[in-house]
Length: 186
Image (cartoon, rainbow, N blue to C red; front, side):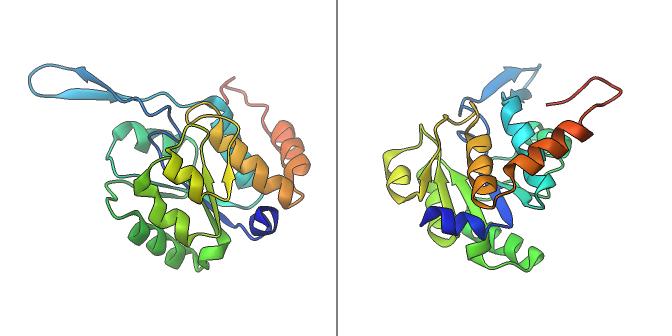
């Protein structure tokens, strides 16, 4: 049943803390009352987002926190939608669907905590990361093999692309087009 759901996906939305990261937030004093925030992102997830783009799947982030680190990562990965400061993730979800002119069943969401449940209950394919809260795992259609921040996003993307029959083609296209002069890459 979840493979049939995956075949319809045109949009993949992600939580950040606990999904794209391992959930830890590093606050570094930078003088006075200001702090710098640091998060760690996994390169496998970045490659997965590139694969999704090659498959024609739009991507987005819906997160309660506001973080310059997230903005930079989203820019680097060319993520289509970034909704930060979204205490009401379901409203943000619906706004993104309206912009893309998509139905809820054409969207997938990857979450890890109870704040993600409203979107997970309303999207076409709900993923929970391996280390998600039990309440979240109970409502997910699919639980990733990897933990948040350790390749869980890649798991979700590969699940969708396999169901759609496009994973091998996207990997070939990624390899063929990924030789970059600057030596950088995911």
